[in-house]
Each structure stands twice: as C-alpha cells, then as structure tokens.
Image (cartoon, rainbow, N blue to C red; front, side, top):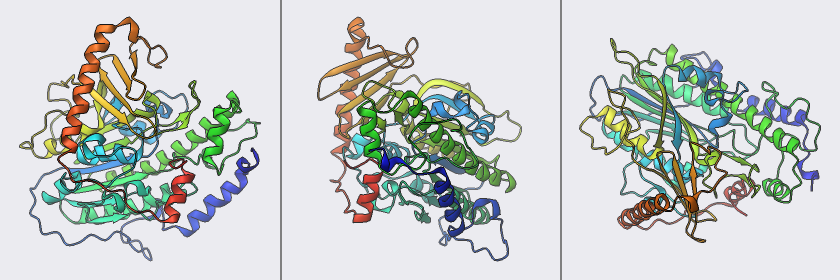
Length: 477
C-alpha cells in the first residue's frame, strides 16, 4: 500500500523545474512592454459607459486554504508574510464562514451572493443559474473591464463562472499534479497591465490552487526537515491516503509531515500572491482598489475521530472557517479602515457588500464591511453540504449548531469555551437548541423557495480526462 506513496523530493524538484520551463513567463519577469514577451491577456472593446472615480476590485482566491495555517491567523510558522503585510492595511476577519466545504458551491456563493441550496447545488457541481446575475456581470454592466484566471475547472466555463468576464482563462486547471501558482500569477500580471491601461475601473479575479491535494514540498520552503517516516512529497493516490488514515496507519509524525507539506504549499502560494500585490502598488492603483483575499474552504488532516483527510463532507471549522482579508479603497484625507473583525460573517455577503460600496443605491440587506461607525450586524450565518452527507450549520453569537438531516443528530458547540468543537452540549441547552433548530429550518425552507425560482440545472458532461482529474482529487470514489 505504501509503495504508490513513495516519490522522492528530488523528483518533485525536477517536476517543478520542468513546469517553470514550459509555462508562460511568471510574474517576476512580466513587466509592461518587456521586449520579446507576449501579453497573453486580451480584452474586448468595451462600450458600456462608466462613472469616474469607482474603485477597482481585485479578488485573490485560494483553493483549500485553512485559516489556522497562516501566520496572519496565528500559525507559529511564517507561511504568509505577504498576506501579513496586506493585513496591516486591511480588515482581517477572524470568523469568516464559507457557504460550503467544497469549491463549486462555495465560490458560487462569492459570485452570486446566494447559498448553494438556493442555486440548486447539492451533491453535484452545477452551472450557475442564468436567472441570477454574477458579480462580474453586475460590474461589467457598470462599465468595468473584467478578467478572470482560474486553476480548477469546477469553477470553469462548464459551470458558467465565466459569465460577465471580458477575458477568461483556465489553462492552469491541470489537476492534482500541476503546480499552477506561477502561471496564474504571471497571467494575472499580464491582465493587470492591460486593465490599468483601459482607463476604466476594473475587476480581476485570480484563483490559486496549489494548497489543494496533492501536497507538494517546494524547494524554496523546505518545512519537513527531520521527517523519517514512509510518506513522501508527491503521493499519487488520494483514496489510498484516506484509507491509511481511516485504518489508523498514519502516525502522529506522518500527520505532522502532511501539515509540513501543506504549509510549504501555502507559503509558495503566498509568495506568488505577494508579487501581484506588489504589482498593484507599482502600478499606482493599490490605494484605489478594493482587494479581497479569500479561500473557498479548508482541509482536514485526520485530526478527528472519523480520521477524514480532505474536505466536502463535514462542517467543522477547519473546513468552513476560512481566511478573509479586505483592503478597502483609501479615500484621500480619511484614515484607513483597518483592524481585526471578530464577528462571524458569511462569504455570500461579499457580492452585495462590494456592489453596495460601489453603488450606494444597490439594495443589500447585510454587509461584511462595517459601517462608518465600525458597526457590523449580528445576523446568523449559515453553511451546508450535500456531498455524501446532508448537513446544515448555523452560527449565532458564540453558538454553532450542526444538524444532520439524515440521522437527525444535533451538534451544538459554544465556540467561546470550546473553539475546537470537541464538546457537544446539545443536551445541556435544550432551549438554545430548539431556537436555533427553528431558525435553521426556516432558513432551509427559504432556500427551497429560492431554488424553485431558477430553471432546472443539469450537470455538464465531463470528458474522461476531467473525470480522472476529479478522481485524483478525491471528488469521485
């Protein structure tokens, strides 16, 4: 069983070098009008009128990124120095919750401001409903130049995430064995060159994938020194790793080694994101830009009794509590709005919050951005998963309820006294449980009403190659 997991770090290093040689030039060398370098970003002509003075919008998104593995969120290893630096200019949200613990429904929430249940997304990833406008479409209708670069086809053209983007590219959606952050960063840099020259407000979405399985150690971030176990960077069978964890074959040292590899992926991705942030500064648009850094979900490493490795089917905080950093546009003469936000917020509120910031007439019932007095609503926050399970979660103040609709088992946690979600206190707080169950049921019913208003979504036909990518990533059993 271990045999297929043995792959030397030397071979991983070779693969990284060969990737860099064959991929389009990375950000570090991608300067405007550099001789011999072709700009790969092509925008169509834009005729939509726009208003002067609107802020640019940049969303830097990372797949499968746990908040607690970032030094920005207290990790004792320096994995995110560039995000740490961005955080000093920004609002840093300590309790940002993803609408789902896997890619398509979570980013669907970011793009549409709707929960996956309202979009008809359950077990299978489905295209975004045509009836519901996306953030890119809303910004494009206001005269924004738009560009998107993604590295996972679960948020690609087959799922209609490209709607509203003038330029869209998913060439780096290569699956578990691909190191894609260099390519994403380089192409996003090309797009920034073009977007800045349009003399229009712009929206750039850049999606990074490398922290997702396969966990690779990068030569510039060698965090696993001293490990003497049997696992090695570059395993090629996720289901085998899950089986090893489930049957108790992974030692504590093995699990720590997996965390070391994951941290190396995180630090590598942070370094490439840092280059894009520097690009915004060098282009003179950093102050005028709304920068949102976000992840879609986290990852489990067999820490709990179920010994699950991966994501998709649980609603513990290691999967749905994700990093969220928001650098608001800085108005001249006004102090920057910075600091830590402790209240729980939902990623589905990012879209209406962004549109309300740009267009005060836009109707938004809730926002993740504090008002001018620093106030933020205390409305409940929800999450759900329908992949292999049927779970709903609700956050209200310090309380978190996870309800299993198949077994009818409630899990109630007081995150103030039990942040690790280890003690189910449902029997100790029957009134609290009953109140939250009622609110959770009303929310689920409202999602059903919303879903009834969109056309029936059909899962797209996938090629054999795409199916194999999903199998290698653990999405297909």
